[in-house]
Image (cartoon, one colour):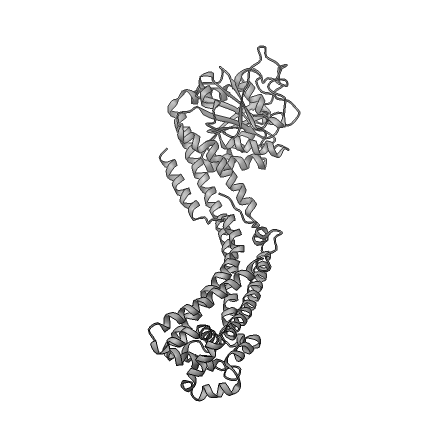
Length: 558
């Protein structure tokens, strides 16, 4: 799932998506598929809190590097019992991190030299280290600083903590109230994760006060059940190790948890359920971002639709108020039907001169074709003009919004497509051909008028177009009146051949067909904009909320 449109909050939404996917890939799905896998205890905390020193103390000798230069931990190290190796060698957890098999030096070295030297390029890998002193059923992961000066360090620390069954959170007597650690602890509370808080470097005389204050803070934030361990401030030995016994209570607690299969399962299930709940909450928030994307897409789509709908309306209005019967069309029509004297004769008695008109059709079909051509040219000009106006308006509307500007980019769509004039001309000709077919169908079986249809099909078609373009009041009544009776001639001529009711039906069908052809033309132009929306494929939050409910059901069955 993506948030493709450039909305103001899209970047934040994308971060939520990344976090939710990472939580699913790194913890939820792996743990759901293997509830009996060893617990993963991630040792995390603030810069300089003593995380690596604590890990070394739990093992009994230096296995991970500690020191004054920050950050010392860039490449995460996962320590596990040899019997648990198969659980971590594959991509069951943290599948995005490459596995590297580490080794322990034959002779212990000082903590300042233990493990790999800090290397930013190695942050995409996870060092696996077998260690007999790590209890079977429990693995320890030494994570980078959660408040590191390195963005990548902080990102990786957050990813590792999200993959944990259990947090061993390390802070110090003078930094336990820092904002960054507490944001993570609050996240732990929301996930109902098992947390052990290690308060490091505590002066013995201040232990009671600091412990009481930290415990009160934990309780206030929903973490009253977190285990709290205190390590007194003391100098490190020559190997960089804490005094013996400093972490006995923490070690005993971890060993007891690892040895109790039922308790391990309870911790895993509780953390899994909490993680699923957190992912569901994230998905609900992501659904809100997705709804905003859908709303923006709908606004862009509706804006394009409104502009092209208005263009269609203006085109059709121009074809029914007589405007197209001026200029070249009028001149060609008058050439076709004759002089003003002819108009007066038609007005007096159309029936009396049928033979005369028929002879005119039979003898000179070319003027009728010229009428069709003039109508095609005029109608094409109207369609091109209105399509260009619509494109310009849509382009302006879209560029007034961040999402629209993103979709359009540097492309200029403020005009018709390169071959639109050709398409418009072809559509008009197709419409005209359709009128001729209507006339042929209407004239079938009319023996007395067979010669009219045989010799005057183009003329009758031209007359029908003139009638269609002069319907100022729509079909009702066929109100005609333009250019000294021009349209009247066409109407009377058609009525003489087909009858008044048939002319109404022909005109109605002709207008409907014209509407369809113009609609298709404008739809093809509008698609230049809408295709960009379709390619982006913004979706709403409804399906995400459905997935969130399914995910909660999945956790409930764990």
